[in-house]
Every structure is written in structure tokens, then in C-alpha cells.
Image 1: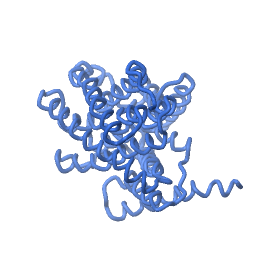
Image 2 (image 1 turned 180 degrees about the vertical axis):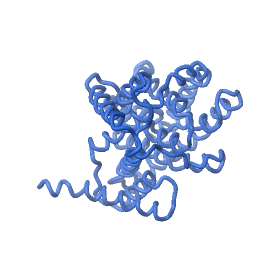
Image 3 (image 1 turned 90 degrees about the vertical axis):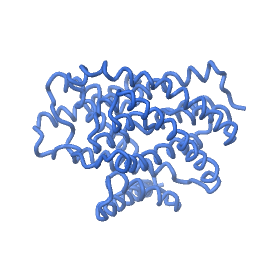
Image 4 (image 1 turned 45 degrees about the vertical axis):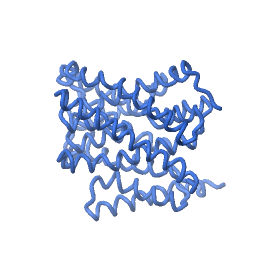
Amino acid sequence: MSALESLKPRLLTVVSAAIGAAAFWALGLPLPFLFGPMAACLIAALLGAPLKGLGQISVAARTILGVAVGASITPELLHNLPLMAASVAFIPVYIALIALVGVPFFHRLCGFDPVTAFYAAMPGGLQDMVIFGQAAGGNVRTLSLVHATRVLIIVTIAPIVLVKLYGAPLSNPIGAPATTIPLHELGLMAVAALIGWKGGEKIGLFGASILGPMIVAAIFSLSGLIHMRPPKEAILIAQYFIGMGIGVYYVGVTLRELRQVVASGVAFVLILAVLAATFTEIVTLAGFSAPVEAFLAYAPGGQAEMTVLAIVAGADLGFVITHHLVRIILVITGAPIAARLLKVRKD
């Protein structure tokens, strides 16, 4: 295969995503740079188009969100961390309930093998759960579709809930224009993105593309070296690649997979919605958090996607991401241990 032929699927993906973004923008729909590419690539994938992700370019786009979160970590946020403790304490209980309901659901009702059922139920990062499930002998394709469906539905429904139920307008400025940010701060953000990402990968940090830049940017923020989030142009680019990546996961999906695997993923999201709503209500009624922050903190979506929604909703980014970090850390460190203790094996 020539270099040009190998590039065609990626070019088709980029063009499809651009058309989707342009259509959503022209129609005045919310978050056009996230939902436009996601919808266009999803439709193209379901129609059989040979789309392909952009690999390291898409990963690099996630570093922008890591820097955005890190720049939001200020001395004031650290001062307020003890106030989050009561809400964060519910996260382990939340994860345990999801597992107790989800594993039997996928194994007994959906017919997944034990390993695939276990990692399909875990509310961790999509890539991490697929990697762990593959290492344990699970079905990689099934895990990819289940977790992609979870992220897709939550990212689609969450904005509707924010607007209709909580009255959040989703019009918060996502960042200042690049021309208004000092050049030295832009340079430091680029340094935080690159060093955090590649340095995190080198030491084996999970979610290195987000957590690495977040850590370095937080150091810069706490040191008073940067005072702003990445420019809005960069945030829009991150949205574009995230939306495109979600849609690409459905390339090659068959009717059987739609009926069995994707439908199972949709049903599981309904279960997750009930659990998330319950914990959101508990945290809100207990006075531990405002409703919007509680909802975003317990919505079991991807860390990158929840970061985008927290920014556009004007939510407390530190509060929301702290909860997601705790959830991801607990799942990533605890899932393999729990699988061994429970002797989860393929049939």
C-alpha cells in the first residue's frame, strides 16, 4: 500500500469531522466542534466508511485539556480541597455499586464471558479498560464498543441535562483568544503539554497525555508562572479531535454487534444514569456541592469529555476533575487487583 493510499482513511476522517463541525456551527447547535465531528464520524462509520484515527495527533490534542485543568489548580483550590473530602469519600462506594450491578448484568443477562463482563462494567478510562481486559483474555472489540457507547451517550445526554434540568447555559467562555495571552505564558503551556505528556509516558503514568501536562501546568500555576487557561482556539482543536475519536470507534461495526454489544452498552448506561443521579442528589442535598458540579463530578464519562463540559458550563473545574481523577485512579489500580482476588477468568 502506498503512503497516499494509507493516508486516505485519515483524510476522509478529517474531512468528515470538518463537515460535521461546519454543519453544527451553521445550524447554531451547541458545542459544534465537539458534537459536529462526533456525529459526522459516527454516521460515516455506521455507513461503512473506512475511517481511521490520527494516532499521536489525537493524543497530542488531549494535552491541551491537561494543561487547562492544571492551570485551574491554584492556591485557592488547594485551600478548598478539605471541603471536597466528604463528596470524594462517596466515590469508592459509587464504583463498588457500579461493579456489583454491572458485572452480573453483562455476564448473566448479556452473555459476556467473565473477564469481558468484569472490565466492561468498570467505569474507568476507555483505553485502560480495553488494555487490562485484553491482557486478562477479554474480548477487545466488545470492550471497545461498550466503553465507546458509554462515553458517546453520556457526552450526548449530559449537555441536555445541564441545560434543561440545571439551567446551565453552556455559554461560558472556554478561554481567551490567543492574541490576548502573553507569549511567555503560551510558551510555558506548550512546554507543560510536551514535557508532561512525554515525561509521563516515559515513567509509565496512566493517562499520560492528560495527567502529565496537568501536573506540570499545575506546578507552573502554583508558582505564579501562568495565570490563564490555554487559548480558546486550542480548546476548540481539542474538542474537534475528541469528537472525531469517539465516532471512529464504531468503524466496522456489524448489525450483530449493534444488536448485542452496543445495545448492551446502551442498557448499562441507563443503569449508570440511575446510580449517578442518586449520588448527585445525595451530595447536593448534603450540601457538599452545587448541583451542576455534583452532576459533572459523578457523570461516568471520559475525563477529557467531562473537562470540556465543565469548562463550557462554567463549573468548578478543580472540583469536577478531582472526583474524576479519584474514580479513574481507583478503577485503574483496583480493577486488576479485584479481578485477581475474585479469580475472574475466561470460561
